Length: 146
Image (cartoon, rainbow, N blue to C red; front, top):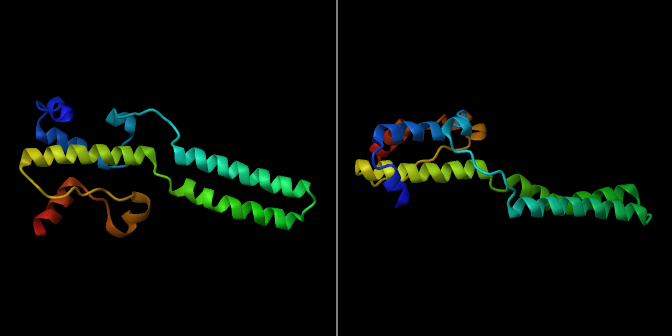
């Protein structure tokens, strides 16, 4: 509600243009004026502590006289879930951008009278090879076909 009141005098064309820039990952957050605080979430802390704990466990088993191969295997075995958690932990910048894009898309849709779903841009690194880059115009053409 506060967002709607804050952008009530902004023309919808400007909002659509900003939405396209928001979904384009080549445009930096500084250019969009959406720089947020850099903080590490709970999953990041858990991952870091788990990786440090697995390294400490491996070094401790070596100091007890276990073989180096066993200690290394134990370290990797313990660190594996924490490494996977760190890799797949939500990226705060990207998730924050997508949340803001959803908010902006719902405002644009409300003004246009559309009730269609929000179409987000998938991660470019993996999916651009297969699907290409989605824009608001391409999302409209997809929604118009359905």
